[in-house]
Length: 307
Image (cartoon, rainbow, N blue to C red; front, side, top):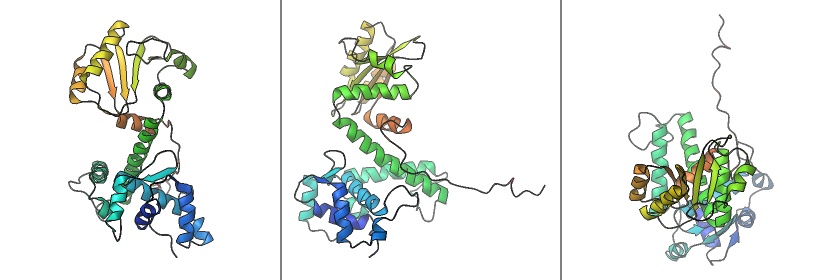
């Protein structure tokens, strides 16, 4: 039989892990390949990029969409587990689970709407959600697909960050700033982490390679919202260090009051929430790697010129 599409794999995947145990996704892929009676050639079929197996990719995307709806979770890397909401969904005995079905879940709908908004922003002169087959050019289809892939990757990056220890998170923050061009060498930056004592400062990094100025860091691996009081404490810590610049990074998000206070402070304070942190890591290739490369080619007008 032909390789099933990712929507066709959603209900079988959710049903397979219905007992609440933690499963290795790679093992489920191998098991499903037998259940769906894939041929040896189909099992080894690659995506057009030549980098990933088609069937494994489709199972992975089925997992991603179920996760966006809150029906499954990833307790650790490469594993999947059904949630209480997922079990409740199976009790309804749905005949099929697809994108349309998942739109009843607020978290999935928010994910889809965000993807559409970004697709619209990348497609000029569109005022409504475009149809990929009709309203967008092939280049715009590629860009929309890319934006959607990045959105899913950012979500996974943030999940991994939240699962790491506070000490590792502080090191990660320093590594990111180095990738962004701050701090000189990794060795120089590494020696400053945790050396500043208490007072709400988790690390210091040079603003430039010569160390003409320093940036003070606070890195909080939190789930709850960060409010104005926490930013006030950080500004107080900056004052105690006679510093003028600080970066407050969290895995959660900031209240509007916290943002307003940071913006009005006499100190230069930059707030980076979990979403922005994930996108900065992707942009600067920290914790991610290139899975596939596509080359979009166009006519070389100079080549065909006979002048």
